[in-house]
Image (cartoon, rainbow, N blue to C red; front, top):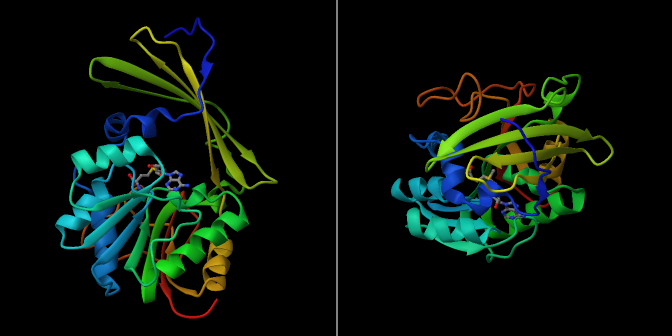
Length: 272
Ligand SMILES: C[S@@+](CC[C@H](N)C(=O)[O-])C[C@H]1O[C@@H](n2cnc3c(N)ncnc32)[C@H](O)[C@@H]1O
């Protein structure tokens, strides 16, 4: 494919603005992420009330609902929330910013935060805001289950940063091509992504930017402890987005946190 036109800067996010496209781009037909979450919730005796922070299309929230839980899904993307209410009914969906929200006190037995949503907390105050909000929302002894990129993976490894990555997929007769460039802002501890989308439907290419906190395992442990959470598990897999991938019946992970993804289970134990 040749790119004859300059990409148009766009402040949205093609995938979160088009939830059906998001699900096509990141298919999870057997709901592995939700199953992994449910497995951990059961293993650690979580009660039924679950908050899914950064719930996206609602597919995991709805699976947990069907598994018998009372689920609230929270997101800041209106297209995502609309899609979730329509296509993945069951949970209660609310507009809430995970970096600071108030959904009542002792409202939930568990908070889950999947696929790097936690890393939208770019700064320490934002991370503090998120954990303080979780603490308020959780009952004493409540669980936090999260799954995200591992900042430590980038120490000494440049494979993902060295060259643009190309991906292509077709959805509803249109083929989308994404050129993704990643760079690290070391001082801000951010993984910054520039993505240029082209579609073969004649539309102009668009350029979009996103960033995720490069959060290190020790930092996460420290922040959790500061907000009264004790870490039960912190490891790099297997998980729903690792290679090899987690499968039902597998043990819930070891103590190594060196790989691409970080998985954490923490319990609200006391005063921070
Ligand atoms: C990578 S998607 C993950 C969606 C879902 N958890 C999953 O695993 O499929 C990240 C989601 O976080 C949402 N998000 C981004 N910033 C947020 C914020 N500050 N508060 C709440 N949600 C946010 C996005 O709209 C998007 O739906």
